[in-house]
Figure 1 (cartoon, rainbow, N blue to C red):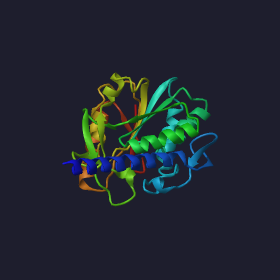
Figure 2: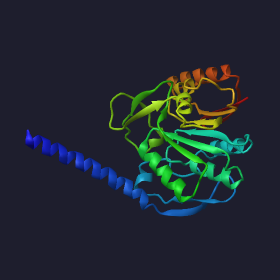
Figure 3: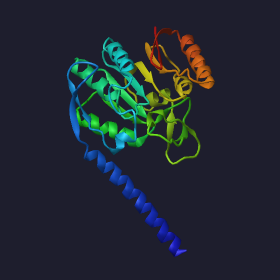
Length: 260
């Protein structure tokens, strides 16, 4: 019995040390100054390291057209608006767009970077701090139509940006919640005007977690059309959004953009 207790304690210690070592790697990030593709000025983006290699996409130019459309629309929003980027992945949209808004004189617009991975959220936080970005808030959770615990599906490649969270058992599990609850619990404390949603087949549930769309005027939602299941889901998302008085504006890569 004592032997089992000792072995268990050692295993727990190894896990904790492993986590600490991974976290320390973020302190050692090397940055390069690059042109911000979505507005004025530059920003510091980490040089490709082991973490970024395992978490593709990892450059700010991925899906450039989607990010640029989101940024350009947000520039026109009322003062002190809130905007959401979910799933924020490693901040390849959140960081450059928040920085571009601030550099364009719109630091009053606060970007909420929402992602279910605590490790990715920590990475976003480090990069945002390095760039001294003040108009970003990071929320570690997923979006759904109810409060629930979900786990990430195992992936065989490095495209963690395409991770699906719908399993009840897994190595990485986290809390999913509604936007309504995040507002109620003061995790979101700005009027949300625009949302960019890339949540890997969880889009309809995330949208169902919003009871009031009155102040939201822009939605950019990933809607894949590559499988029968994806097409069916995209049709349901499209119908749901139109019932909320949005009009289809355009399709950019895999995203449908809706405005009022």
